[in-house]
Amino acid sequence: MGFSSGGYNFELAALSKKATRGKTTSDTFVYVGTNGGSVDPAGAADAVLSYYRATQRDLIPFLQVDGEYINDKHALVTASINKTKLDPVSFNTTGASTHLNQSLFTRGIYAAPGKIAPNYRGAIGVSDSGVSGVDVTVPAFEFSVRKKFEFVSTEYLLAMVAMTGRVNSTSWSIFAPGEALFLGGEGGEDEQNWVDVTYHFAARPNEANLRVGNINGVAKRGWDYLWVKHGEEVVGDRVLQVPEAAYVEQVYPEANFNALGIE
Image 1: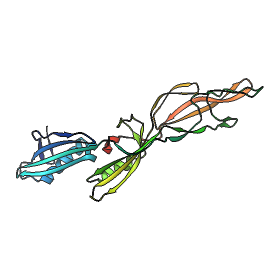
Image 2 (image 1 turned 120 degrees about the horizontal axis):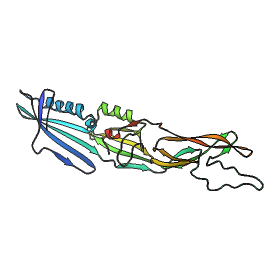
Image 3 (image 1 turned 90 degrees about the vertical axis):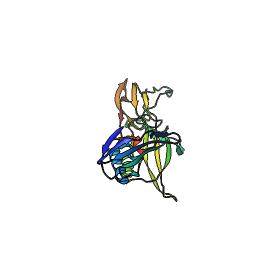
Image 4 (image 1 turned 45 degrees about the vertical axis):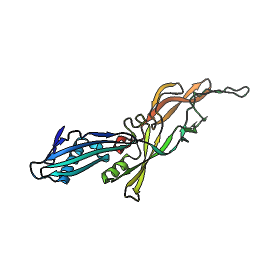
């Protein structure tokens, strides 16, 4: 495989492809660069970096490029793509609280002697003024992932900022699109001058076939918000508050979490 960039022509060095797999995955490519004159290893490395920026920009956060001198006419450039597998360093499965104004199912309706108990079709806390609902615990998985870098660019930090408060737009790690929420991260240099970054996430499962009152087949992604509009229905001499429509709202923007370099 050959390419040109920054005034250099590059050819993949023979037997140069390397790959390692484990907690950290690494793919390495070695190129021989020429420019028809006297080569500069730093200039050749910059040319390869520019090529990746133009053709595979999503790899930039975890790409390392090094240039070496072979002779006056040739430079050796190594491009290493290093990713860390998602391996939580802390986690919490105590769930999250959400407000519901509809139950999953009404298990029983019991009337006082001589009275009739209306069927509100799962609406909770019904009064003449509306539906008050109830706060419940729902599944939620909060976890943190730690990764060390030799160097973190301002471009990468700004990408982290932009991704905070977003859900995954594509499948990422074990999560389907819409299930993971990036809560942000923090970090700093350690004693060896490596940049130590901790990423925080929360996850909720997608639901494909919810039932809301008499409404069936409601599809909701993990971090979407479901709300129910109640309407009045006359039954006998009573005006009841009953579910009339269900709405699934996207409240978090999406982002490609693969750009974080953890999977």
